[in-house]
Length: 242
Length: 247
Image 1 (cartoon, rainbow over the protein chains, first blue to last red):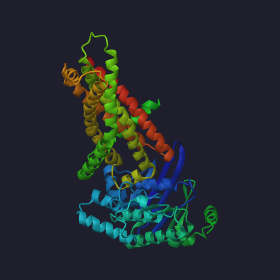
Image 2: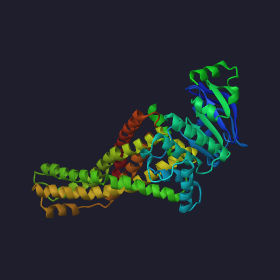
Image 3: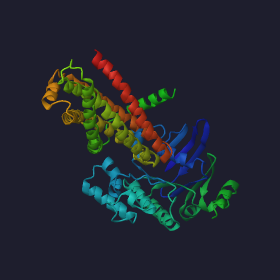
């Protein structure tokens, strides 16, 4: 479980995250939604430690991530997988080497064990026989799958997905959604998903957090959204034409 | 003001680099890849420049040695010294500032804007240490070797143009090369080359690593890397000459 407690972040005096508290649960797809510029990407970057918060606490289980040293944070980071909006696969490495990268850096697996794990992860994302291809040889959907395979290589407890469907056709989007949902349940991962895709939210969302102008405006289960009475959230949903 | 901001950030960037690598085996492999990229990848351009620099030096010095007061074999001595002291280390490194510097900055910049560096950080890897330290080490090990190679080729280039242009005989040229040779001149050139190598790789990596935005900013970082590296090479050329040769 991940818990945010009163986190604040500002850039050059402009408040981007204002006193946000929220909980993200294991085995569930925790969605963070909001308009562009609302602060959800900054919030995700704060959660994984790419940006330091000005104030507040972020708990991974019982570990306060914010007040840990760089070396102590590294231990938590090894339990984090992340699927980036643009996949962030290493261009100079093949698919196999991309997925093997964290295994070679952080485990003492033999080359055979690494290859077995790579093949297992590729099978898990339904992408066999692409080991020797490079990211430039892959379609957008395939890159996302490789990104997921790399994110789950170390059996993470926490999975962050930043706009997992951006740039994908509707069919591939649904496949990626299903895959993330399956993995979340199968490995009991605390999955945090930033998205604008309302279909995705209603298909697989469990816990929803709505961010409006840097503040948490609503939190709850997806079944409660329509009866939330939150006019801004309902307006956001309506604008999404869903 | 901007200069001091950059200088402070550059110093902090360097301090963050020098940590124990996560996995020595991976670090060694990365360094070898970079050595191949910087060293082997620059072989052609360094060869071309060195031969022509030596050739031009012979022609230009030859034109000026017409009085008869200076023995003609001294042409070989002048070509040797001008190449060892200045042309090979400085011109080679200025060219490498363009070739290697822009390559490092654009590679790092692209990795930054496509979130590949963020991906490393989230995995718990010190991205600067993992990506930049092998480049600096590879540069510091490889560029001095390229400079030594350049010295040899420029002297050969000088001999070729001297003989083909009927400016000097081979015997006289070789006699000039062997006259008053100071071994420290090579040491001086290597000190310069090592310093320039560090400056080129670290300044370029710094500019690439700080890239924010998109393709346009990657190009801008690449240009900045080349300009700042070249300026640093020129300034340190003066400082090292003043410190090491004036004493």
